[in-house]
Image (cartoon, rainbow, N blue to C red; front, top):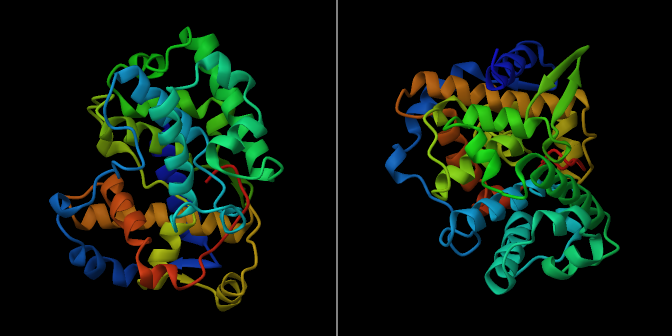
Length: 307
């Protein structure tokens, strides 16, 4: 079974027995019908992402960004750029570095430290997240150097036109690790490995024939959107913890159910709307989560390197 199908299967299994976060199945069909057509969906933000220039540089940008596309549980504690979210603060910092000085080489990433990265991102070098970012980039640099001769296009080329193959390759790297235990079973989720494949396609770095096989990229924001939209029902005690700012433990049943439930909802939506893929649903709901009404309500936070 391909990894993306393992993700779907695991998410459906979790959703089928979830106790803390329940899919409101009777509401899904109307919700799916209410979503706009694909041509109205937003694209990547050109101000925060590198969308032109040599393919190797664009590949380096998105693999570097997605190797550190985590930390939402820490984002309330970092310095934000011009009112942007934690993700866009990081993306803008990398975009400026690539524009002004070019990409880091694989060798440079292999040894990058928290202080250097914090300077690029405008953060306190002693912040815990900077050390976690540096560790992830150390692994990325080692993988690109050792497995692909220092070429960031190497993993894309090795995937042979398959987004699924690229996800499976990245999933074997520590810097993209994302599996959780639930009720005695290991559940693969792999948000960032799938985001990387999607981003590389959006940026024109890769042409994948099987992008529609990707699942939703499960994080903390999309479950929040689906809760406020009435599609995921959180138990009252969980809502109370979230809204008073309490952290949700990574790998806890509540956290796994949130993420798996969102993945399963996207599959139900795609089944009801054949014009949309799970990747499309992710793109729409993640962007929707940046709206004022969703930002006004505290979202679930977990300190994890998965998302």
